[in-house]
Amino acid sequence: MYKSICILYLICFGCYLLFTRQPDYFDGEKVPAVIKRQIGTAAGDSELLAVFNTGTKEFSINPHYVFRNIREGQQLTVIYETGSPEKGAVYAVWGYWITWGELLMSVVLCVLLFQVAVSVTNNPSPEALTEQSEYKEEKKKKYLD
Image 1 (spheres, rainbow, N blue to C red):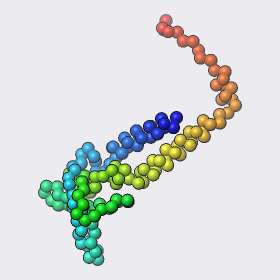
Image 2: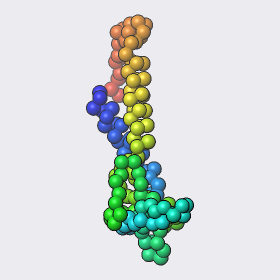
Image 3: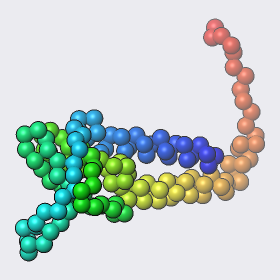
Image 4: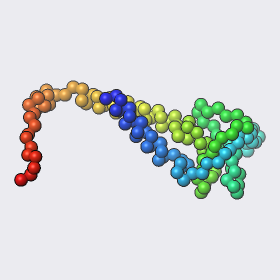
């Protein structure tokens, strides 16, 4: 039973991931990007940004994400939608396909729903047990007359 629940979870989570990414995986354009240090507008401090070229204009996005290590000069791939390239994202397994919030919530939800299912079916009432033991399957005709 645990094996089938894990398989069902992986299939559902995989379908969810495939169709909910922003920018869209199917409509997005993938281009190479380089991590460059650029001066911020606030207090003159510098920050690392992923700079990519769409063919007509150069854009930069924030490549930082939880547990993602980036260095200046590092080559990455960026995915963006042609209508809004400024909303691009670093194309990587961690941060684009799998985010920590979605992963955490889906595992918690899966465990919670499994525990609810186990608790509902674990202790049936005595009436349900007698009804189940007295059940006899009706004989069915092979062909309708």
